[in-house]
Amino acid sequence: MQFHLLATMAAGLESLTTKELQDLGYKTRTENGKVYFDGDESAIATANIWLRTADRIKIVVGQFQALSFDDLFEGVKALPWDQYLPMDAAFPVAGRAVRSKLHSEPDAQAITKKAIVEKLAGVYHRRGRLPETGDLYPLEVSILNDVATLTIDTTGDSLFKRGYRIAKGDAPLKENFAAALVMLTNWHPDMPFYDPTTGSGTIPIEAALIGHNIAPGLQRHFTFEHFFFMQPQILADAKDAAMDQADFDRELDILGADLDQNMIETARVNAKQAGLLHSIQFKQLAVKDFRTDKPRGVIVSNPPYGKRLNDLAAARRLYKEMGDVYRPLTGWSKYILTADLEFEKSFGQRATKRRKLYNGAMRTDYFQYWATTR
Image (cartoon, rainbow, N blue to C red; front, side, top):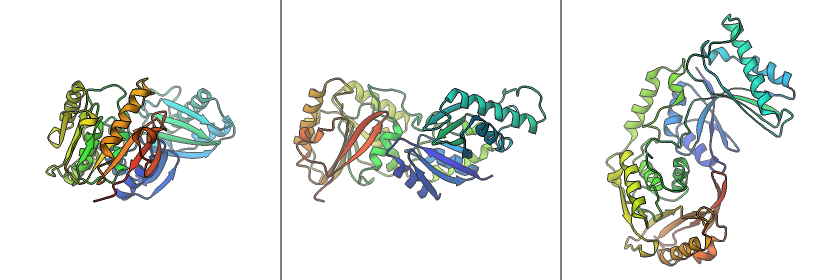
């Protein structure tokens, strides 16, 4: 069966997800926060297992213009729901409406639900309500600029939930966002990698997954596993193929440091859960005490923002320490994420490039200082 599929991601990460899908062999079409692609059942499994920067993978059942609730009802009812939902499917409907005449999300949800029930009742020759006692098929009606899009979520818990993070610190970074921070650098697995403010270890763990070419979804489950048209062997085969592509023997030089020894222990617990403790060195170390004789490498840091810890002055003192320690390392590239848009003043150097990213709802900039010597 062929599906029109949709990967969703945080604003600013579209290009990364697009490249990931293209590297997997799919043709893509990109919009804000969305990348469309086509594929069969194995594509659903492969995308969910492999995408590092996406939030979820959805099946697009249909799209049409909806200027009235009658348009919405008839458009939804016309879609081939019996190809996707068995008679006993449990199908809660979520709704979103943006810049559209149909701005009432509860009404859009209720009308969508009613139209699907009427369509399935006719197909399955049922009278009255459908049982909805079977497996879960999460649906969404999204109306943007008067165009309704009907989707089925195949992922379940967001893809950032890899399954390895069993211990957390304050303001933890989502795993897919941490992966994006690594992928936006010039790091290669043969280079040293250093996270000076590692917290619960998410950035080094994501770097290690990338370095070993380990698919991030290998340890987790997905909603699509229970869809009636997905044979269990499809997911098993996709995971076997991903395991075959992993390079577990590659040696990596990854260091995660933090001033707080408790966070170092937390990071080790998570790295062990990910099966990567042997690939990452975690060390209690202050930013100002970092020394290296390695001529090149990559530093990635998600330091306290000030806003997040309600102490901007302390955060800016840390940024100054970073500048004092890192500026002389001309063979190293440095990438620092912060919501403090005045970061360069504290660091003492203008960035080579700044990239606007959203850490959840918070506007941040990714300040990039590229190496000038090799």
